[in-house]
Length: 248
Image 1 (cartoon, rainbow, N blue to C red):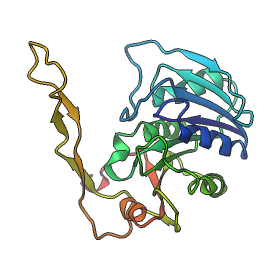
Image 2: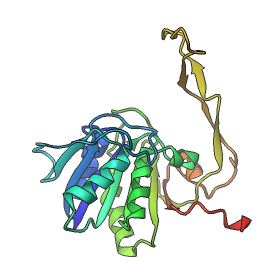
Image 3: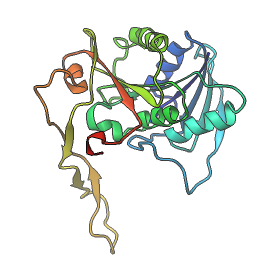
Image 4: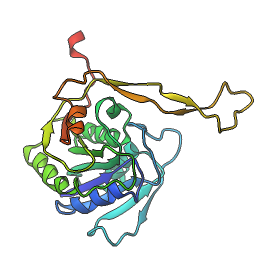
């Protein structure tokens, strides 16, 4: 089995290294990752700049091959398919482990899940893994036993066309697994003025992203947010079809 691993935090983070090692239990792993952080890039692709791809020698990944690019997570999928696997199939794409939640509305911003969406478009089974902490040194050992078992189960069950899985984990001990839907939520207060950054003479101001996530359905117990808040591993089947069929 040919498995491609990508992420949006950049090569070398704890999440992608652990994921690459665990996925070697299922097949031959090829990592194609950005050369630095690309969080919040969604399914962005490099339209205006050329992409590079270079091999990185790694000796502690159970035989996994590693490539890095100046592109985005979505570019990583395209580079894997069109360059590295031009003449052979990619049997599975696994994205992550993202340092930060991709539950609820975060899925549309996520570079981790953007890569999965591109894979789904190409007919490649794809799974995105995230943990509910932005800390680069977050304890991943509670999640580690689930990486192989859940991935193997989803592979055995099969993937429907044009869909992927968005998996979000709590920090700390995991008390179970829950099939979930995407929680309805939104962000508010999303910009703060960057008072410590010089303002160009012709600029209205300088801002940084910030904000508070608001759960629009806090009592619903079938959502990804609810599951993660209750120390459950949330598995959300996700589709690339954004049609609102109720309006047709």
